[in-house]
Length: 353
Image (cartoon, rainbow, N blue to C red):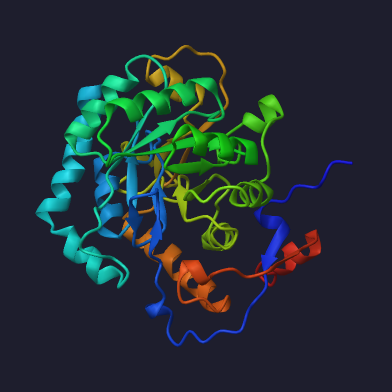
């Protein structure tokens, strides 16, 4: 008999005894890869309607990191990375990160992240990105448990300096986590088919609901885990952290902000920006890719203003969650959870409005 798999809406965290005096004192210091850390556990997704240099710089200002997407020429992607690296020097972010978290040490390097694929010019692209200032290369493919990813990790490890970390994914099984770790990955991007515009599970039938996916992978690896997909608010972020994720990839939650790539669209009913899945027909068309294997949608979403206000709201919710869990930091945050019915899910929402 096959076991039942769970996702975020299937569970609620159980409050624990807490000695947290002030939520302001809660540390959100965490790892994004073996050798790089964050003051806040957020990674801006490597999507062309989410993260280029403007977004990555704002993420860095908040103690987080943005991953510059790969749907650019090598030259243009390197320009975006160089802007981020220069911003960190110009704004003396080392001191700012020291002020954001007592756990941050002067010896730590602030992460600069960029994405590559596994075909064509990916080795040339990765080398150029490192030259431009990147110190984390994220292998961005839909199915990370693949021979091409194995070969890509080996190739990148052979040509890049030893201080460059490689994050690989996306994956959804314990075996995939064990294999990627044995292949030399320095971090794991976890989640298949859970994105807000992803149709992989509908088109292919493949994917593992996020709670079960994270539990299976955390049980077999010591690598930092980045939860990706299915995150709809700070409550889901808290659940992902409680399940052992070190950081969370944000897509739809920070899309539509001022810093997200793309023009503001004015309509009769308000302001909007485009948001599209990485495997959507629109994305493939925009970047001259073959219009096959479409596994995503595209849409417009309401304009949200500055991303810093979105991030602050999410951080407030996460710190409050750690307080309910009796945790002064992410490492201490290990609450139990219970399964909930549809009635429990309804009860969890404001039901007077």
